[in-house]
Amino acid sequence: MLRIQTTWGRSKQCFGEAAKLFSPSFERVEIPYEGTTLPGYFYIVGNDFVSHYSAPGGMRTGFEYYRAFPQDEIENQRLSLQCQSWQ
Image (cartoon, rainbow, N blue to C red; front, side):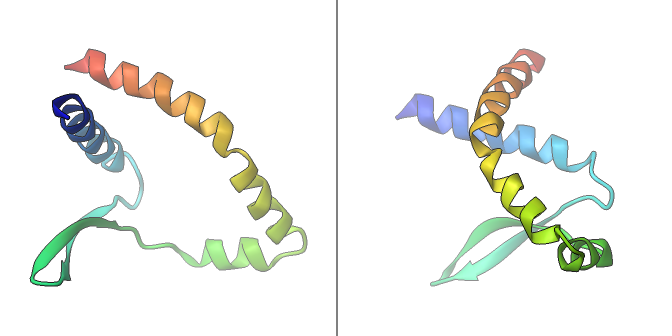
């Protein structure tokens, strides 16, 4: 259990550092829920998102994005190891 909490904490820290590199950056928010709060990130999506997905072929491109998840998992594991070496 300790290993999971440690890994989760490092993952959250690594994401927080990566979020600073985005333009515009993510904003950390607290979402009220049943007497407590849930942590989250808010990211403003510009009009480019709508124009890209409403263009011909845009939805197909969107579906290709989700098909890439298995490769993302492999790359995320590699990057996670890099983040751990930064500490």
